[in-house]
Image 1 (cartoon, rainbow, N blue to C red):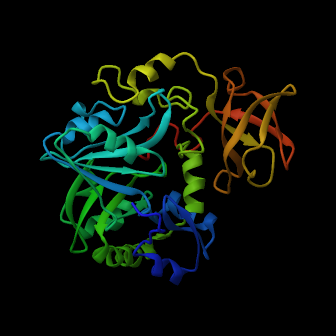
Image 2: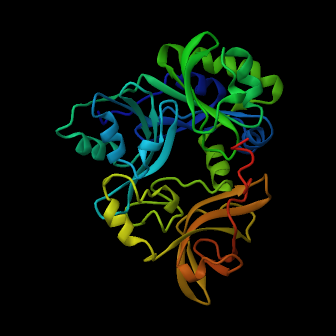
Image 3: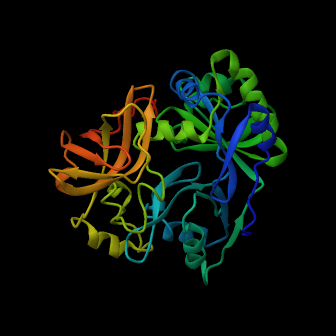
Length: 366
């Protein structure tokens, strides 16, 4: 792939709203709109927010050995993922640490769609494909927009021939939306019920407009990455490389559930299994005694000793709390532990149970 910054076909629509763009994953993204991120946040929790997440990299793996390659590059057991279903999982280094994460969609007929972020997934995928009968195609024409929130079904269902209410979590279907061909997936990054909509560049603008047009009376609005950060922190959803990376094992960041011990010998499997029980840090959440978000990278102290770092800070108007996802030493990561934040701001913090939003997952799994 080229080092030239990629551009979503929706960029002109972002500018119509009023946008501050930033580069992520090789594409300009809507970091902030002229609308308030807090208003967008409220829309996601009460109605729905529409995100352009086309910066995520979409890769097709096709051919007789497509299953073997898809199974080799993720920690999940792909034998358990039939056509029409997908699975989230990390990609590992040879040392058993995390170098990316992805969702892999089984499209059937020896074809998989792999969607990943800014890490080394493509490199590991190509290594897994060496000597195998597969083709690998990076497809930037395929765009990804995500409608997340409790009214997402209500907004979309009248405009597609399928019953979206019956589409199960982490399942997908090829269909039409507003008369345009799409793949709709019951996935998202919000802690809410929602759908990702994969559409071609020629169609995505019309679909975007139709969703906002039909959804506006219900409170639906376009939502920025600033909003996305707030909602995913509330739901304790990890973001590579801030909350996980090449220095962390899956066990340390709460992804032990993704590690298949019975699957084939996927890349990094034995090294990851050997790291189990040897945690140097733990992923945790803290509530901060401060009136706004921390900047990030602050140190966390327990009785004067350095025990961790702030990775993903936000201020949640929804919860009226300053929150952060952090890494702590195991002994400090106990719920109720009182800490001191040391950085540009010095204040108190306390370890709290996560996720803060919908801990029983009743909304995402509705």
